[in-house]
Length: 332
Image 1 (tube, rainbow, N blue to C red):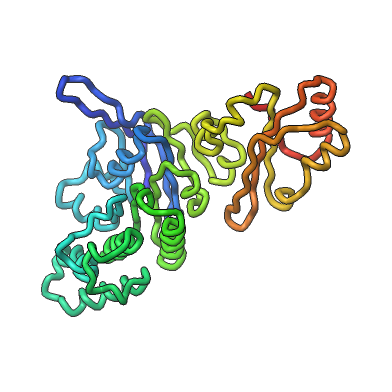
Image 2: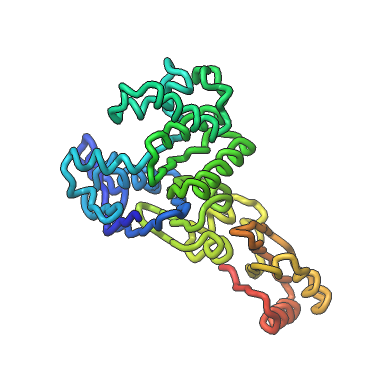
């Protein structure tokens, strides 16, 4: 289990100014879950993940991993504690002069197993087979696609049998189909190996495809925290709404009437709510936005509609919603 308590991180600039990257962060990441941290560029999410393994040392606060406070450990103890955590990055960070097999062997060499060459090679081949690249073991990074490089990076990260895998924008440089395959691989690793995964991203589609819970970070603070399905269907913070329903959609910006947000979960996600409401009330609505996703086998969705300008028609629709079992709220 990873616990982050009252964590703050500031950077001192060359001109003497102090920049606050993280402020009063409190999180608990349970063993075996896939936990997402999402935010816009500059929100502090990458700094946060680097504080988890103390690549960045917090200015204050605690990082507790499996009951051990990392910030209080001596250098040798910290190096030992870090063995339970591996990290993958957006730019892969492979050694260009080493083959895929040799890249996966590298962390095993660093961990003092230099004399066990046959064992290292066997372990590396097992991991390359796990990520679907056994046939590219002798290929160099320059001979691999972006998705293949990330698969090698994942195999390398798993070489020392970590308990935690930290992913910093691991799919940002990949196309949508490759992203989907990498996320499927991470999910399979989580399910079959029990590795706890922390995913840092600025893309909601990454969070809703793989994560169990999510923390939304905004301007160095946690703005919202909860199960992905809850945040998706009922975002409470402005930044969560922006990430789920991007505000650059012209249709949302130009809509001038009253707007309501209808949310669905479970079997009602496929119910013809809008058509029933329009037919029974004989009043039109303008659908501004709609989306459905599946979380843990359950379909969830939400829809933003603009009510008619005629106040009588709008009120008739609102009365119908109040008398129905549909979850809804008026949008600002």
